[in-house]
Amino acid sequence: MTDENRIRSFDFHCHVDLDSNPPDLIQKCEKYQVAVLAVTTTPKAWPQNLEWTRRSRYVHAAVGLHPELVGERFSEIELLEQRIADTHLVGEIGLDGGSKYRSLYAKQKEVFERALVAANKHGDRVISIHSRKAARDVIRAIEKHTDPTRVLCVLHWFSGSIAELRDALQLGCYFSVNSSMFTSKGGTKLIESIPLDRLLTETDSPFAKVKGKPSVPWNTVELMVPISELFGLPSNEISETIWRNSTNVFQFAGIEISS
Figure (cartoon, helix red, strand yellow):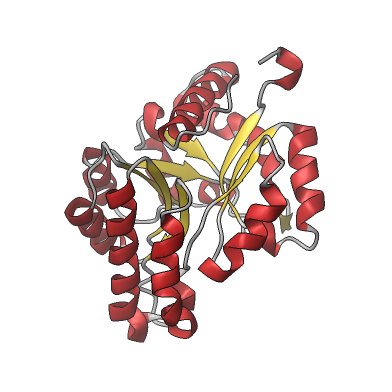
């Protein structure tokens, strides 16, 4: 890949289909040379996301069933399993232990665990995982239902403990971080605890904010500055590390984006 076509940054968790104009956002990702894992919240939404991204060199659609939607979308669990057979990218799936969704926790677990089993069965799957207030159960499920040689798990916007982070590292997990995590001491401490060779970038667009506005995938370019300051390394060295990590993750899913 020539310098003018080289990917500038990576967004490993972006809700492209929740943008006001998804095709335009995808076109801008091409313009700004940002490689994106476009997560979806329901398996029924995946075909449209796949159609939008089919011709893109940079934006790749994942199939998911968000834990917050399990109550109204539990009937789509078999469809999720079927579609995991058709794509190497899975997300957003996971568990949410917040009080608002606690009554659905058993169903969340069933969806999450069946999705992990399906991904492990087919192999070469990369999964973007939600673990808010449920890190321990998420990590246990990953350990029980996946083999790290067949499934690569990316914990998105992780907010568990440092001990839980270390347990996830032992299972081969990566972590995608965004600008909002730098706004708290706890979030910054978690980022500092991630080995550089397991660090990825994300936006969780449009949910995370940058300068008071909904984030966009190319905001990941700006993340190099706080990451480099946190680790005390030059920003170009951080950029190269993130680039290497990111291409390795995509390659795990059989997606070649560096040539």
